[in-house]
Amino acid sequence: MELATRHASRTAVRGGRSTVVDADSRRAWLAGSELFAGMPDPVLDDLAERSNVRHLDSGERVFRKNDPADFAALVVEGVVYAILYGPDGRELIVDMAGAGQGIGEAALLGASCHHFTAVAAGMATVLLLRRVHLAGLLSEPQFLNRVLILLAGRVSRTAKALETMCLYSLESRLARYLLEAVERSGRERGEAQILLPPTQGILASMLNASRPKLNALLQEWQRAGLISRERNVLYVCDFEQLRRKAYAPVGPL
Image (cartoon, rainbow, N blue to C red; front, side, top):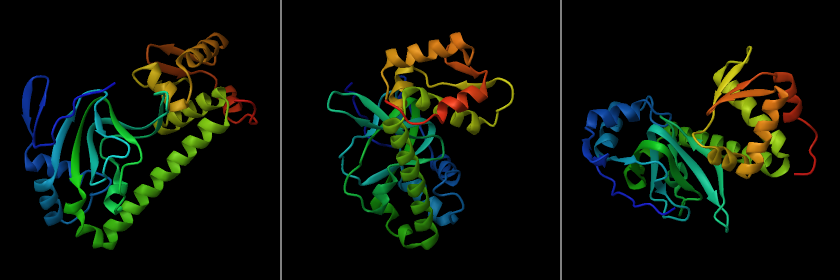
């Protein structure tokens, strides 16, 4: 779905009203991020002055695959998905970034173009960081090392996601997704509560599945007592059975 793109600016419009984001707010966002936490005050002050704010509606793009990679984005509110599109328009969500995390960081190291499309999942706010403004900072070993670590983590997550989506059955893919969500929440006691993505289409894109097949599997697991659901909140009722499904031998997809 084509969406109009707003020009990046310190004054952004959402819901028919103008929102001015001052330099102090931009500085606080930078200081609280994975990429810039602990950086010297003059660096944060300079970046706060140079960075641009974009408020995004759901489905709005930060950048498209193959766009020139002359900037990266820092997510300060909401969630942004990294998406690949097939020739038929089918979506595959290979990674995501939440508040305090960057997306498109390869641009900082000289990538010529973005390798995926970054799309807001719900309303989101990002800071746009131009590569030209970070050239001096990249000569600092501490910052360069941090960029490399974050990029290595993204590559590792993407590789793991692609392995799971391409080599395992839908049943195993869904079970692994739920177990990882439980692990992140630290609630593996009794009935763990998992907040699912806002639509089943998004979850299907994360699992490389069609919505009808995913919905049928969720209903089957509900009938079996493995899970229960209330709208987009899911409860895991049987961890042992879920683990068996997650780590079953690889079979036909």
